[in-house]
Amino acid sequence: MKNKKGSTIVWAITLIMVLVVIVGASLSFAYMSYNQSIKNRNKTQVELIANSAIKSLAGAIENDENSSQLIPNTGKQINVSKMECSVPYGTVSNIKINRKKENLIIASLKANYHDEDYTIYAYLTQSNNQWKCEKV
Image (tube, rainbow, N blue to C red; front, side, top):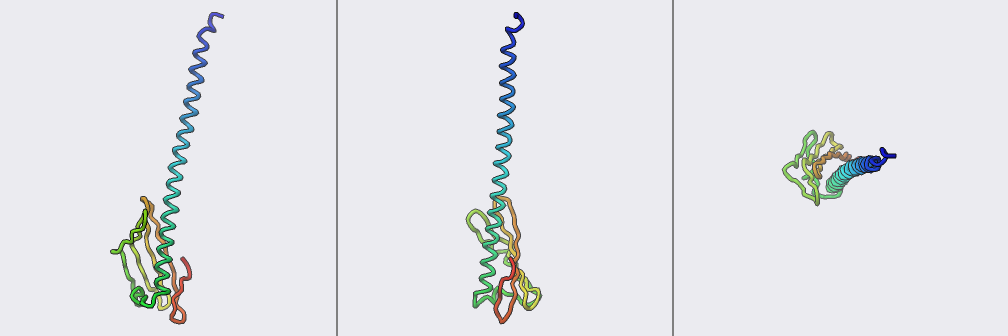
């Protein structure tokens, strides 16, 4: 019985160490989850910015009577990389409009949001002198 007097302190220290390990692992997991959720939010936001910008560009080509300024000659490309359209929390740059064939335009742009980049393309075809976005 004399040897059991110090066993309580050993059990207390062991229990505290186990709790410290569990709490540390939980905090580490929470921090990793938090960072992953921020990364996913940034990725989603940059994709939404890019989709919105490319649809606006395609809509300008489809609906604008003066869209001939946006439409290059066949085999040519218009680079609007000097113009950076700032949007809340992100930017749109490297806007390119490339006319591959007489009736095919490929528009592209690059969106950036908190160190996340996303490049998107829109394919527009012409029929009856009207441009229509076929695929984004």
